[in-house]
Length: 362
Ligand SMILES: NC(=O)c1ccc[n+]([C@@H]2O[C@H](COP(=O)([O-])OP(=O)(O)OC[C@H]3O[C@@H](n4cnc5c(N)ncnc54)[C@H](OP(=O)(O)O)[C@@H]3O)[C@@H](O)[C@H]2O)c1
Image (cartoon, rainbow, N blue to C red; front, side, top):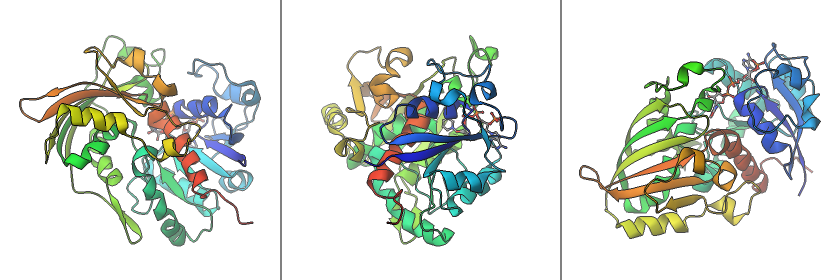
């Protein structure tokens, strides 16, 4: 396997830090370049993140002294030095949209954690186990952008990374109506308890824009390619409430679901246990062996015990039982900055490597 030189745009942020810890030992990807805002540009990485390094592991020694670049002012120069970039920045949506297109037009593929392009119809939004076939839209996007190599592919929002994987394989029974409440960790806001002490002993019943994303983004993941666009699915109907809870990492969801053809409990459990996607078939380096894990114990999954299952890339499910209003209810859990952000993006990049989308012309 060739190795690929990678740039991290937004390297100083919460998701950027996760990229650094995940990629430091990656078998295919080598961190070549770090970039962030003008506030960090020109500083050694360890200085740029002084007082806000939030990972349990120390900053890898190979990274600590790398000089941070300006992601906006130096976009084309950065694009020329790497094979592709991961992007996770906190900027205005229209600025992110323009920045990601700049990198793509400079023939540098962009694997993005940002929401700006999630509803651009020829930009695939990929959860690798579910809709890897949406990568087939990339040639159409390249035609629009006028590029040979450059394109943008995005990750979906972290809130839905637990319940959409659980529901997706159940669609063989026709998932019709979904009512979900998410309990979301503070790292999802790029924060730690030190930097957000108001979250200790507290719940905040509002996360800006999150409920809309939780209801709409699954329809793109369930969508299909028609011509040069991905058309959203029209079902299931999803209604969501999203709460911020005093947890460092790990988003939990409580789900109610109604089907067109109600399956038995056994059929649901068998479907989850047997579910495998392309990452498992291809044995991608970041792929969990058992993507969906069901717990029989009534008090599992628990955030602290189970968020790191399969190196934070597995989805844990529990408490499946009949419901008096819907057909069934259950809970599920995923790690928001691993499966839900940097880890999911690394897995997507591994998938796109295998599909040849990072190749250079011979
Ligand atoms: N946290 C999660 O669990 C999660 C999950 C999924 C998706 N996301 C998405 O990922 C993105 C980043 O989230 P985060 O939690 O990592 O945010 P964060 O911790 O606030 O980090 C933001 C990053 O953006 C950079 N930045 C800000 N303004 C910039 C500018 N004008 N030009 C270039 N870089 C700029 C910052 O650089 P400086 O340090 O130099 O300011 C920093 O590296 C967001 O779009 C978020 O919605 C986050």
